[in-house]
Image (cartoon, rainbow, N blue to C red; front, side):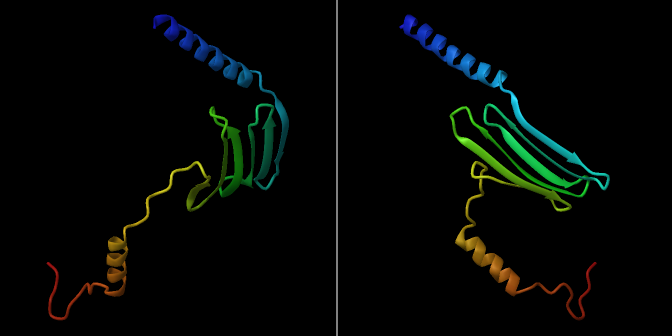
Length: 127
């Protein structure tokens, strides 16, 4: 049993070292960058181990771009995004999504929307 455990750990260590050495030996295959006097910019890059990205925008105002890489399990992870005065907006199949809103809550929200509360009533004041 101990021999099997030692062998399994050694095998996993070799696999991990192989993956790390592959990434450690990665090279930049393409890199382009453009920065203009008006603050606009664009860049893109790609590496030999499958990492790629690109972005363009105007510094301090907005940006949009994407990146991609391979997860340790071999799955291709792709992310697109934009950023502006309203925040950062990522999109990708790997990102978690909220569960659907239950029907009873949706019904309650609709009731509230269609029956607004009157803040002030005649002859009654707030103290």
